[in-house]
Length: 467
Image (tube, rainbow, N blue to C red; front, top):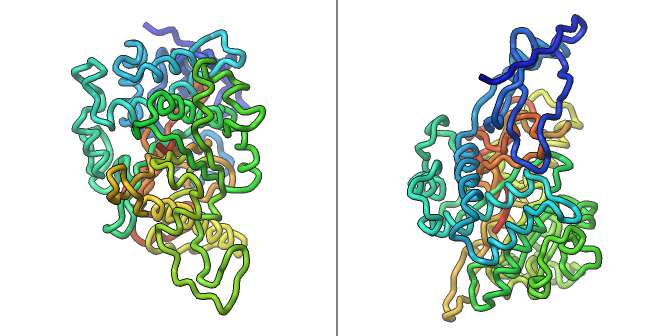
């Protein structure tokens, strides 16, 4: 029977504080958590890790703390919880079936004697992405040695086909998916894996770990295209772009060295890969009147084709297909509904909505163009879709976010129009909450109301990471 500890009621505070808010080590999987009673506001200590889920408010409740708490509701994230179970079992089996380089990297990252020890949430995020990309989505489930999975092969097939999986919860209209389908059916969908990580939990390090995984594996087998040696990192602004330069292996002070992420024998392999860091603004199509860095009225080159667009944006990465895409601040990259009607907004709010819609549209449609550009294949033919699953790294909800608190997107966020992110809860180690992994339903059709419900599409996704 689990021990229960209740705090003494405090008349001035409807929701009672706990004496020890942090229960677990940030370097290990959480083993206990606090649960608040919605009636009394008192907390009790519960065993085991909190199941992944998310809270949403049914109405604005002002400053009445207990009333606000009582009018919040919680939904579980079955996909996240299933992945947690499968990844935990795979970890305990020594990452059975993975490539030798992958196993060595994962074991290296779990070392307690690293100069800057990695948080459990960072390791779990990377484990989940690798588990999906290298073992399950590639059709190698049998190599794990397991006969049964919490996330079955049939459920995975459905997630990759944008069909409702046999997981509990969801509806025929809103359910998790691993693909982000453009509005035009003729276009190839994006495969998106996303990680929702709390601010300060180290998502830049997670990106570095994923790049190291790709480059080290490719470096050991240069003729294979299973692992990319080219990475495109998309970010929202110049400040973030400058901060992300630490992800370039050729830069002094890069994270691979600072965090000792790559064993010494694999470090030369990192130099064979190429990382391009850019802003979403480059995803705008180029003017028909632009020649080089200048524009001329007499110049009319015609619309920029998908192939020309891909060559311009990817530069030297274009000839290194396949390319892994990492969307930093991936919650900025989503598909707006076909129609958005924002009522009751003042001028500043409408401006903010327009800005967010423009950024989201340009960003995701740019990825669509690259994904659908024709590229030469090894045999000399042409193929599309060499944009590997994009990994979206999204921070926790912040003030000013135009989406409602319950707008949870799954985790690999190359998300579809409805924004589905897969779910392996990637939150900082002590896990003071349940640590939902962004995965939540997105409304479809015209949207009305305040800026809270602007996401379109017919699904939801929680995860970010782009391979």
